[in-house]
Image 1 (cartoon, rainbow, N blue to C red):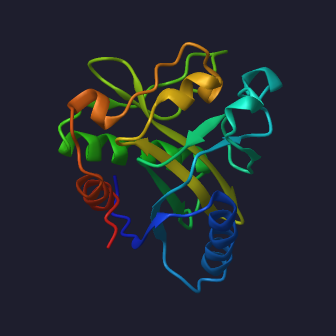
Image 2 (spheres, rainbow, N blue to C red):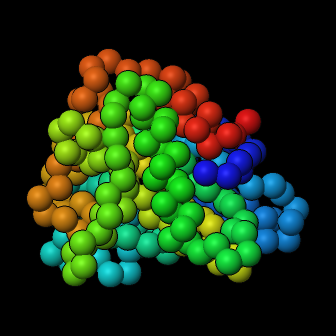
Length: 211
């Protein structure tokens, strides 16, 4: 991968709607070249986000009490909650570089971060006619540990990734995650035992050359 240093912003728990407002401002600033390429690390209170193609049958039962929000990113249903590290990437794509190219880079950088944390992981190619296998999967157990959904507007990316660190995994079982009924979502804690959010943040920032 070619060097692509990013400016790092870090927050703790931010409501999803407020995060989307700020992300929109960051994207507009990058489109006007008023800010450098940026990685924003944060977490969200419990929320399901869905893409425009998410079938109604994939949504959770409303009695679970977790809000469902439609979002402009690619991909299907994703869960966010405490104990998950979310990274929003506001990056100006190079000439001739598409969003799919950048998503592949994001996958590989996260594989690198997970390896540094002691978890062997991999990206997967999508077989023809299958649901997109965008994200990162554990090599040994074959479980999905990172979800990725991004878009680009006027050459600048937005949205990003969600890495399960040590949060409750049960809400993933109340809906159809990523358009795949049989997907087994996991976390660093499930795979490795105890883990530190601070250590994960540092490893992810380092893999994205973010400071």
